[in-house]
Length: 478
Image 1 (cartoon, rainbow, N blue to C red):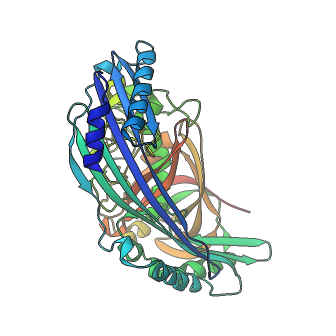
Image 2: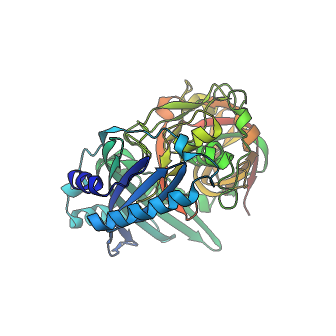
């Protein structure tokens, strides 16, 4: 496909200042066994290309699933027309941008390729995991599933850029719901496909898919008999699978430069972060170190180049608590005059790249899990996100978790249900008082991060240790 597209791109390039072709093909397969019954496999195969044109200060783009020379030529003509219409009418002079001209290839990991086992064998794995979830008559719903996506892109530019990337993405899921009377409690493996990684079938073993069914079901039953989480101000120890959500909502989205510049105001919202804060603003305590890192191969949003051709580089966005860098690609960096990252990404061939967090991680420190627990006189340990709410400026938030245990006098004690906590992003991270070591790090993410008009649902990765916060407002459900 690379050679074919190169030949066709050479034939259809208009006489403009800059032109690019971005081809995307995604082949997906989703397999589920619910209540021990296999559901029909859901399969997809989607391919197309976007032509982007910059000319005389304007920018235009057009996408097509017709990859013939004529189909691509029509898209190029539309993109050129749109560039002419936007020239002199945009918030930035696109002609002043220096667009990358990358040359390279990136192939993600897959130790055990998805194609190495048959469809029937995959369903047998799911049936075995699903059957282990039914440990009691009080388990009223249970399922096991695996979603796989093979992702291939080609990026070509009129300035000599030539990049091919190939990724294999796997997202397994286990869920059990327990009921007694009017109370229903659920437990899952990471929540909403949170255990999503790049790789092949080895991801199932890496995330504990084969060994977690009975634990998940037993914890759902355990919650039925548990007291509600207490309310009040206290310490909160967040497991890495809940840190995923905390990072995503109250660091990732607020630091997207296009949001800070106002582009998402009427849809996904703005940010409490202002351009003048970079380099001086204390986002968190000295223990907070956050990196943008699309170079970590097993994470869900790793790649070699973003969709505007910037090479992937690990960068600190928060260093020792200080805000140092935003999440913005070529265009947003030029508009804001701020340092950014290689995060200009599109969800598919028929959407333009916009600023999107990729892998956004909290770096580990030196505390063991036992040391974090021992540091708490009164608090709650929480696992696995269940609910979330955050305001339009990504500041005031309220999050709920599936499972919790009380922390009393330096020890983990009994289980409590319906744990929730709330805070304000601008001050919450400054209450960070303990960061776990490498042994407490979990690798999670989401396939469902939404943003942009029309909407783009994109894949994001988050790795984090367990983290301890002081003086947090905690409350239970009823």
